[in-house]
Amino acid sequence: MKKEIGNERKNISKSAQQLNLLTVCVQSVIISSLLKKIARRELATTSIRVENMKILIIEDDPKIIEIVTRTLETKWYEVNLISTFYGEEGVELVKKEHPEIVILDLMLDDIDGFEVLRQIRLFSDVLVVILTARGDEDNKIRGLQEGADDYIVKPFSTGELVARMKSLIRRKDITEATATVAVKPSTRRLSIDFANQKVSVGGNLLRLGPSAYELLYLLVTNEGVGFSKQALRKQVFPEHSNDTTIVDVFIDKIREKLEEDPKNPKMILNDGTTGYKFVGSYSMVREALKETEG
Image (tube, rainbow, N blue to C red; front, side, top):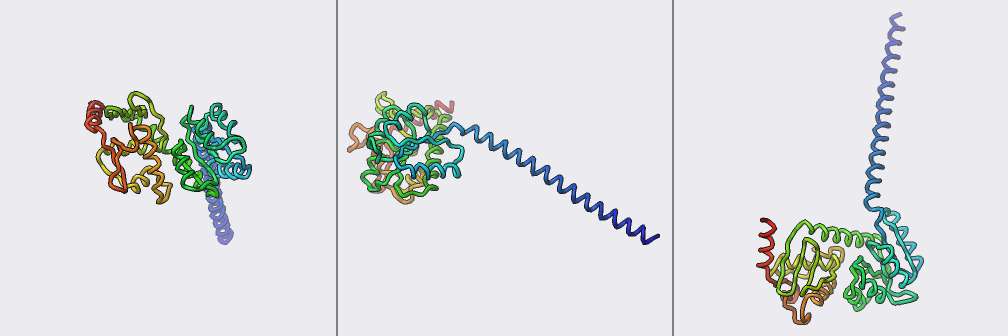
């Protein structure tokens, strides 16, 4: 009898343990299900926030379009990719679709990529990344001077392409975030409205891409301070390894827009042989800051 009671107690204890284990498993399943629902909800929210982001690729090589498409599907799946083989159609798609980024090949079948870039810049400030087999420095400098925001040479790393595009988007977002800072430094010719991200010379509004704007902002808000080219590269173009050519190109672009005589600049000066500095009227910046704080 005692033996039977002992066995029954063991069975009850074993059943209780199994029940506890089952309860834990059920709870784990419920928690896992809830976490998945939360993750899906968060993912849906993220997708809604960026689902309208468009990237246009103007490229005559279908293999490149396929590579970029597959890359975006795995590394930046929220983006909608639009493509065309032809430059003229690409210009029209920029007008119609209003993409956030244009990936542009230079060697197209109908018109030269530089001509496509010039036409786009007549009406749009869209971010443009040149993706081309032309890797010589002259073409790189020409592309940046004519309005491209970045220049990548084929063959290219898909990871680097995505990283650079995301960097441009972040830089643009940072530029837009300066709208919370109502500062208006100016000289006799130069006026910069950081609140509205507008730069004008003699009353004429200038077009500056996010990289040029960020570079100018850094120099102007540190009036009189010399920055080495490497320091400017690390701050504004961190994705460009140790190549400071891009800094020189963008300084030249800014000088072309700001200076009366770009070859004899009065506002953005060389700091020795290895850097640059802004020498505008910083007293007016301080006055604008006082007005803002008041």
